[in-house]
Image 1: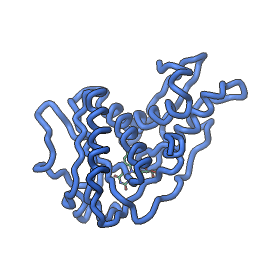
Image 2: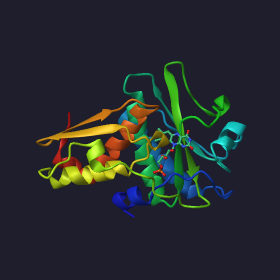
Image 3: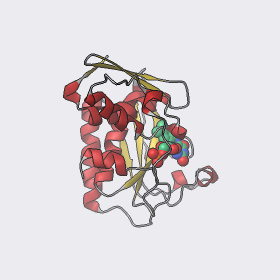
Image 4: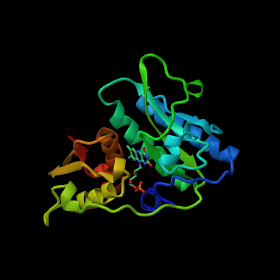
Length: 221
Ligand SMILES: Cc1cc2nc3c(=O)[nH]c(=O)nc-3n(C[C@H](O)[C@H](O)[C@H](O)COP(=O)(O)O)c2cc1C
């Protein structure tokens, strides 16, 4: 499965099988996370076999069941921390999809279990991603149109249209899709709208856009 197929097949999954993740799957995930941490300076952590974070009434209210594994998005407090977590978190999510795993970004309905997380005073936990073998594969979300989220027109280059299409497949908090992509020549500006976690959404959307458009075709401004 390539990344484009992974983008199309990924949907949020909130109910998981009790099957523990295979040892080599965990090793593969740890390798991807390690590469992301090295590249970004983030401190992302994989937590396995830990049911407490998703055992509260809040998590059940959020319709989660049998989440035993999750990825904690942690990094040094800074202005761009949320966007970076979005970008690298989605990179891990799509790799996980290729490995036959399911995921769901979770901003609110989980409990922070301090004993299992390594967070120093300069760092912050932004959010988590539930991960495992889903009992189902999820459903395509209702989507805004391309013109709602970009300055696409009849004259737009093919790569920009493909990028905007990929951006609309991205998961966003409460499916808000509050972002705007503006193309001028071979540059693109991505702006977050107002809404909960919209900066995390922006990082996710930028990662999707890059896959759709091809990084070699444009630069971010
Ligand atoms: C930043 C962010 C935060 C999210 N927080 C939650 C959450 O707290 N609880 C939940 O059930 N889903 C959460 N989601 C999942 C979204 O509801 C979901 O991605 C969106 O409805 C689009 O559906 P899809 O992921 O299936 O494409 C979150 C998604 C993102 C990107």
